[in-house]
Image (cartoon, rainbow, N blue to C red; front, top):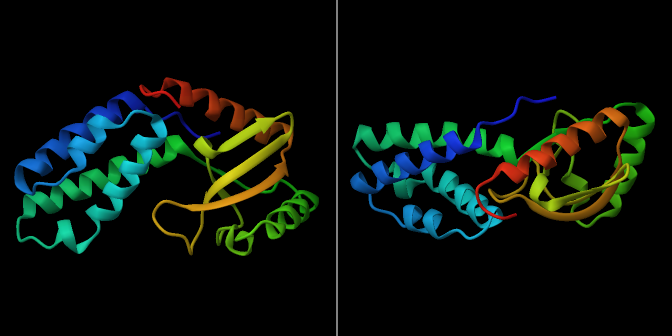
Length: 178
Protein backbone atom coordinates (compact mmCIF):
# COMPACT_ATOMS: atom_id res chain seq x y z
CA UNK A 1 0.00 0.00 0.00
CA UNK A 2 1.26 3.47 -0.80
CA UNK A 3 2.04 6.00 1.91
CA UNK A 4 -0.61 8.65 2.63
CA UNK A 5 0.07 12.07 1.17
CA UNK A 6 0.10 14.95 3.72
CA UNK A 7 -2.40 16.84 1.58
CA UNK A 8 -3.00 19.95 3.71
CA UNK A 9 0.73 20.66 3.94
CA UNK A 10 1.18 20.01 0.23
CA UNK A 11 -1.68 22.34 -0.73
CA UNK A 12 -0.33 25.11 1.51
CA UNK A 13 3.09 24.75 -0.10
CA UNK A 14 1.56 24.84 -3.58
CA UNK A 15 -0.40 27.99 -2.74
CA UNK A 16 2.77 29.66 -1.46
CA UNK A 17 4.68 28.73 -4.64
CA UNK A 18 1.89 29.91 -6.95
CA UNK A 19 1.84 33.31 -5.17
CA UNK A 20 5.63 33.51 -5.46
CA UNK A 21 5.36 32.66 -9.16
CA UNK A 22 2.67 35.32 -9.66
CA UNK A 23 5.00 37.92 -8.15
CA UNK A 24 7.61 37.09 -10.81
CA UNK A 25 5.55 35.90 -13.76
CA UNK A 26 1.86 36.83 -13.43
CA UNK A 27 -0.69 34.16 -14.34
CA UNK A 28 -4.25 33.31 -13.44
CA UNK A 29 -3.46 30.15 -11.47
CA UNK A 30 -3.52 31.69 -7.99
CA UNK A 31 -6.96 33.13 -8.59
CA UNK A 32 -8.28 29.92 -10.16
CA UNK A 33 -6.99 27.75 -7.30
CA UNK A 34 -8.55 30.10 -4.73
CA UNK A 35 -11.89 29.97 -6.56
CA UNK A 36 -12.04 26.18 -6.93
CA UNK A 37 -15.28 24.96 -5.39
CA UNK A 38 -14.66 21.22 -5.39
CA UNK A 39 -11.78 18.80 -5.19
CA UNK A 40 -12.32 17.97 -8.87
CA UNK A 41 -12.12 21.68 -9.84
CA UNK A 42 -8.97 22.09 -7.77
CA UNK A 43 -7.29 19.01 -9.21
CA UNK A 44 -8.15 19.99 -12.80
CA UNK A 45 -6.53 23.39 -12.20
CA UNK A 46 -3.47 21.70 -10.68
CA UNK A 47 -3.18 19.53 -13.81
CA UNK A 48 -3.41 22.64 -15.98
CA UNK A 49 -0.79 24.37 -13.82
CA UNK A 50 1.53 21.37 -14.12
CA UNK A 51 1.17 21.42 -17.90
CA UNK A 52 1.81 25.18 -18.00
CA UNK A 53 4.81 24.82 -15.67
CA UNK A 54 6.45 22.70 -18.34
CA UNK A 55 5.37 24.89 -21.24
CA UNK A 56 7.07 27.64 -23.13
CA UNK A 57 4.58 30.14 -21.67
CA UNK A 58 6.04 29.95 -18.16
CA UNK A 59 9.44 28.39 -18.88
CA UNK A 60 10.47 30.85 -21.57
CA UNK A 61 11.96 33.35 -19.18
CA UNK A 62 15.54 34.06 -18.26
CA UNK A 63 14.68 34.33 -14.59
CA UNK A 64 16.19 31.38 -12.74
CA UNK A 65 13.84 32.04 -9.80
CA UNK A 66 10.87 31.23 -12.05
CA UNK A 67 12.53 27.99 -13.17
CA UNK A 68 13.22 27.03 -9.56
CA UNK A 69 9.62 27.72 -8.52
CA UNK A 70 8.28 25.74 -11.49
CA UNK A 71 10.50 22.78 -10.57
CA UNK A 72 9.21 22.92 -6.99
CA UNK A 73 5.62 23.11 -8.28
CA UNK A 74 6.30 19.97 -10.33
CA UNK A 75 7.40 18.11 -7.20
CA UNK A 76 4.26 19.15 -5.35
CA UNK A 77 2.06 18.15 -8.27
CA UNK A 78 3.62 14.68 -8.12
CA UNK A 79 2.49 14.46 -4.48
CA UNK A 80 -0.99 15.72 -5.36
CA UNK A 81 -1.19 13.17 -8.18
CA UNK A 82 -0.34 10.51 -5.59
CA UNK A 83 -3.35 11.62 -3.59
CA UNK A 84 -5.84 11.60 -6.48
CA UNK A 85 -4.55 8.63 -8.49
CA UNK A 86 -3.90 4.98 -7.84
CA UNK A 87 -1.94 2.45 -9.84
CA UNK A 88 -3.30 -1.06 -9.89
CA UNK A 89 -1.56 -4.13 -11.29
CA UNK A 90 -3.36 -7.38 -12.07
CA UNK A 91 -2.63 -9.85 -9.28
CA UNK A 92 -2.79 -12.98 -11.42
CA UNK A 93 -2.85 -14.14 -15.02
CA UNK A 94 -6.59 -14.75 -14.79
CA UNK A 95 -7.17 -11.25 -13.40
CA UNK A 96 -4.96 -9.78 -16.13
CA UNK A 97 -7.05 -11.52 -18.80
CA UNK A 98 -10.29 -10.37 -17.15
CA UNK A 99 -9.08 -6.76 -16.92
CA UNK A 100 -7.77 -6.81 -20.49
CA UNK A 101 -11.12 -8.09 -21.76
CA UNK A 102 -13.05 -5.43 -19.80
CA UNK A 103 -10.74 -2.59 -20.77
CA UNK A 104 -10.51 -3.44 -24.47
CA UNK A 105 -14.32 -3.34 -24.77
CA UNK A 106 -14.33 0.29 -23.60
CA UNK A 107 -13.88 3.10 -26.15
CA UNK A 108 -10.26 4.20 -25.91
CA UNK A 109 -9.34 1.09 -23.93
CA UNK A 110 -6.65 0.04 -26.39
CA UNK A 111 -4.16 2.32 -24.64
CA UNK A 112 -5.42 2.02 -21.07
CA UNK A 113 -2.61 -0.13 -19.72
CA UNK A 114 0.64 1.63 -18.94
CA UNK A 115 3.97 0.29 -20.17
CA UNK A 116 4.53 -1.43 -16.80
CA UNK A 117 1.22 -3.34 -17.12
CA UNK A 118 -0.65 -1.21 -14.59
CA UNK A 119 -3.79 0.86 -14.80
CA UNK A 120 -3.39 4.38 -13.40
CA UNK A 121 -6.86 5.37 -12.23
CA UNK A 122 -8.34 8.66 -11.08
CA UNK A 123 -9.82 8.11 -7.63
CA UNK A 124 -12.18 11.05 -8.20
CA UNK A 125 -13.62 9.17 -11.16
CA UNK A 126 -13.83 5.67 -9.69
CA UNK A 127 -16.48 3.90 -7.68
CA UNK A 128 -16.02 0.71 -5.68
CA UNK A 129 -19.05 -1.52 -5.13
CA UNK A 130 -18.18 -4.81 -3.52
CA UNK A 131 -15.32 -6.22 -5.54
CA UNK A 132 -16.13 -4.23 -8.69
CA UNK A 133 -14.30 -1.01 -9.49
CA UNK A 134 -15.98 1.26 -12.03
CA UNK A 135 -13.37 3.43 -13.77
CA UNK A 136 -14.15 6.65 -15.62
CA UNK A 137 -10.73 8.33 -16.02
CA UNK A 138 -7.21 6.98 -16.45
CA UNK A 139 -3.71 8.13 -17.33
CA UNK A 140 -1.58 6.33 -19.87
CA UNK A 141 1.36 6.93 -22.15
CA UNK A 142 -0.74 8.49 -24.94
CA UNK A 143 -3.16 10.78 -23.10
CA UNK A 144 -3.19 14.50 -22.55
CA UNK A 145 -2.40 16.19 -19.25
CA UNK A 146 -5.90 15.70 -17.84
CA UNK A 147 -6.17 11.98 -18.44
CA UNK A 148 -8.47 10.03 -20.71
CA UNK A 149 -12.16 9.56 -20.11
CA UNK A 150 -13.12 5.91 -20.26
CA UNK A 151 -15.79 3.61 -18.90
CA UNK A 152 -15.11 0.06 -17.73
CA UNK A 153 -15.48 -2.19 -14.71
CA UNK A 154 -12.88 -4.56 -13.29
CA UNK A 155 -12.96 -7.01 -10.43
CA UNK A 156 -10.43 -6.61 -7.64
CA UNK A 157 -8.92 -9.11 -5.23
CA UNK A 158 -9.07 -8.59 -1.45
CA UNK A 159 -5.76 -6.75 -1.19
CA UNK A 160 -6.67 -4.40 -4.07
CA UNK A 161 -10.10 -3.77 -2.53
CA UNK A 162 -8.49 -2.81 0.79
CA UNK A 163 -6.06 -0.42 -0.91
CA UNK A 164 -8.75 1.23 -3.05
CA UNK A 165 -11.07 1.60 -0.03
CA UNK A 166 -8.29 3.19 2.02
CA UNK A 167 -7.37 5.58 -0.79
CA UNK A 168 -11.00 6.53 -1.45
CA UNK A 169 -11.45 7.14 2.28
CA UNK A 170 -8.38 9.41 2.30
CA UNK A 171 -10.08 11.66 -0.28
CA UNK A 172 -12.43 12.78 2.50
CA UNK A 173 -9.50 14.63 4.07
CA UNK A 174 -9.38 17.01 1.11
CA UNK A 175 -10.44 20.50 2.25
CA UNK A 176 -12.96 20.95 -0.60
CA UNK A 177 -16.05 18.81 -1.26
CA UNK A 178 -15.64 15.92 -3.67
